[in-house]
Image (cartoon, rainbow, N blue to C red; front, side):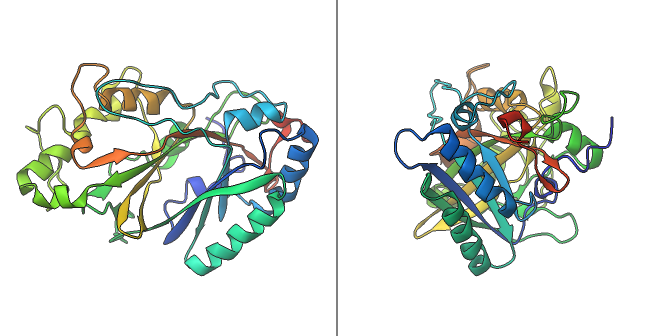
Length: 307
């Protein structure tokens, strides 16, 4: 596989930062002229280096800009016995860093660059929790390690980025974004064995439980158990707002196929078995975005008609 190291937004591979903001923008008004949209994108592009700010465009925005990206579509309606909300977005930024105050000012710059065409819709502040400096993994607010089965090195690049599709597409990534709200009281009330079996790992040492029930999260989402294998690169982070808290689930892929295969199985659509994670958490949003590749250290928007 060719070296695409200069093609992808580097923040996607660099792991989760100390703090982050997930920032969603929507159009100001029902419609905006294509020229106004392109002008706004031209203004924001210098603020997006792909490392401190990772950007994603929703399918509707790509279409409005006159672009066409194979495989890009809206978050699907899944149905089933558990609710998996669909909340289409417009423009999404993952603002990354070490100081939340600095991220506030970055957000303000993005907001001003996009005005008056786009308006700020929602911001979720996130953070690393009990980060392990040895393995590089953080913890979910339940205490379980998050991202244990993430692909690494070349396998991470293979899973997270498009390749072999041509200029303006290679190095791009498809990202699924869901906000999950935890019921921490319900989790705390569970016997530890039930907590472990909901996830399929022991909370005490993160070891996988061989005889965990088929509903255990690690069994529902075992990436190598799908045909074809369903590998994604998770970059999820805990979030907190007043008395609510949970996980911002973020999964980057070379397409949406792997995420959708996992989500269908989690929802019980393959075999009627619902993922045990639904006992302690629920998604309240679900949206898809296309993260453009880079070119010479800048966003490569050629697929959207930019030169």
